[in-house]
Image 1 (cartoon, rainbow, N blue to C red):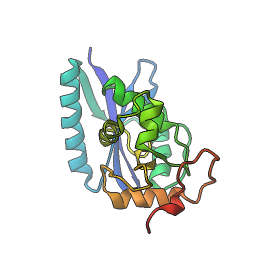
Image 2: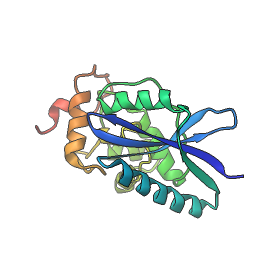
Image 3: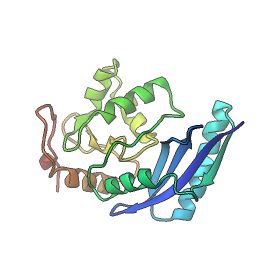
Length: 196
């Protein structure tokens, strides 16, 4: 029996997002994929093709349907807070694809708190591969849950912005909005040090 995935759209200051969640047998929904963009129809098609490719690689059967029963309302509302540049409640998520290394990078990035940044090198060190900064950057580029897994908070070693799958202007906007949050003592770089 194929796993059931449902999707919905979220909207906020940073544009549209399509959210795909895995629905468990007890009807819990965990976010597994999100993408950002401005054209919902194109995003849906892109998401379906991407996930079909990933599940084919995994040899797994799946079925994606639109959320017509409002099963994703809470998840959508919380993600829309993120799209508005505001902290949200905890959003449950799962990684349904990715290498062990990528998953370890994403988990480590998820621990970078609102208002803080880190570096590719620091993430590489924390996952036990101190010379793998470039591989960490590549893992950021394949992040299945943008904004929720905050790859935008990862910078180059000397405070350089680095890349971002949805463009450096989006990365700057996200960092500037989060920059008004309280900074923790362990912050490696504050947002105020970013170029305007």
